[in-house]
Image (cartoon, rainbow, N blue to C red; front, top):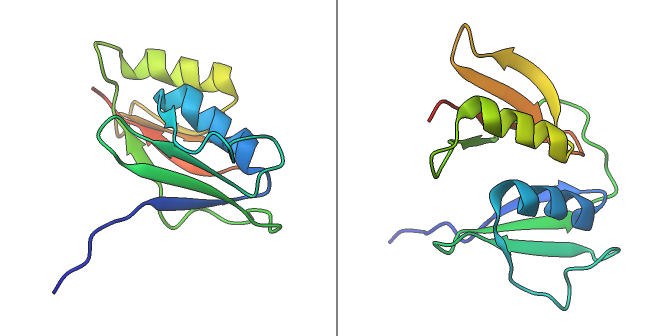
Length: 120
């Protein structure tokens, strides 16, 4: 017996806003357009290879560091630095610039969920 990963869920005070940030950052598709709207309690995105991320309403604000996070690598000839700048322009915030020490950058989405952008 075994299990397979269905999707990853992010709790969110505003699922649409957070999903829109990730949609712009990753370029993923909207899978349920009827529920993907401002005020929706949940918004799904799906990667080109079928991986699903759900943004689900929770009234609780994030208060501590994530126990899990996404690590992202540049794709399609882009660079880590260009993707960091693009993420910041989309609304991410810099958490820790570790390019010199570890070669990655820790950022946070509009609700504070951390993620890393690694070297290509």
